[in-house]
Length: 88
Image (cartoon, rainbow, N blue to C red; front, side, top):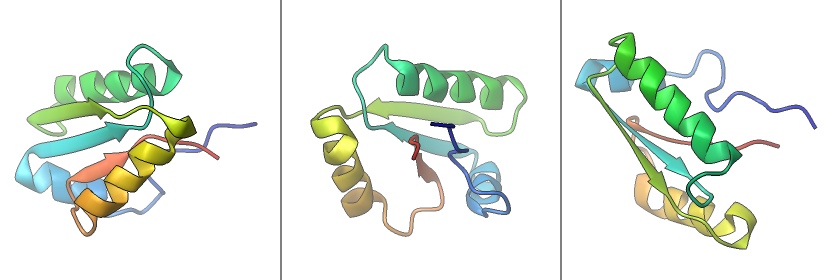
C-alpha cells in the first residue's frame, strides 16, 4: 500500500492553523510506531520552519486506529486546528 498525505491538497486546515499559531495532531496509534514518528516529524518540521508556533501530538492507540478515529471525530469536528495522521 502507498501512504497518502495526511492533509489533502488544497485543504484549508494548514492555513487556519497558521493563522492561529497552533495545531493539534491526533495519532491513532501508540507512541513509537510509524504513524507516531510521522506525526512527530511533521511537528518538528512545521515548528522549525515557523509554519505554526505550537504543534501538539496526542497518541490514542487501540483497535487498529478505530479508537483514535472515534475520538478525533467526536472531539475535533469542525476544528480547523486539528488533524489526524492516517493512511488508506
